[in-house]
Length: 301
Image 1 (cartoon, rainbow, N blue to C red):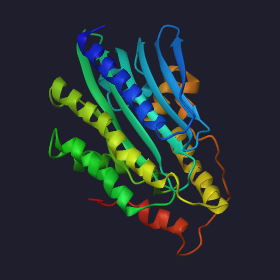
Image 2 (image 1 turned 120 degrees about the horizontal axis):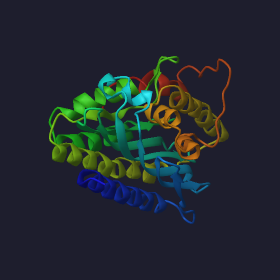
Image 3 (image 1 turned 180 degrees about the vertical axis):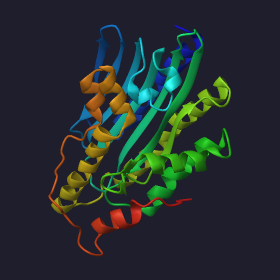
């Protein structure tokens, strides 16, 4: 194991632990189930899942470290020079589905790739980001979430927030619905334009700031009163989350194309979802406000 991979691995395992602790602190009794796994020839990892809690209907925090003889298509579409390269990939991914419809779903992914071309050249890059998917929006939550994202970016480069916020707005977009998945956040990929140390510091800033961005929102919304109609709308909107992850999400496609561990890859899907044919929100309702106001790219800061 190279020194750079060892350092990234150590950080990612620590991040997984800290995120699980932060989420468990919101629960009264439920704790994460730990499922260590290995996959023949490609590596392994540890999937941690918390289900049926007081606060979280399902929360997953995955660590994986895999290697392969060639990169899957999802990783080479924009990098044809890496077709046929061997690689190692490490990452932590988390998707959190709260019980309360007024508490938003959140997603985090931070990852590191190191590839060796046929000529022996080694190429590395970082990727990841996080985003927030509310069902009933609150401006103050959106501002807080983006403020934490900007703080993480500004500590490394003054242009990163605007650049990676725009990338998130573009990436977390459901083309066949012509709507955004949520209120965005950060998204970056193929990041190696600065030194390894600077890029690694940025990855750590993103991973660390996610806890500060999301947990205060959960603390504020987890006890919000709601009725069955709010729960029904939450389950309906979760369908959009499923559609995006199965059709567009590069991490999901990478894992499935690579032949990774299916249970861990699909951990991101919510446990309860409904689809309604041609459903329309009532005019001037909070449900209409979600798509007409919150799910439009905007500057929250």
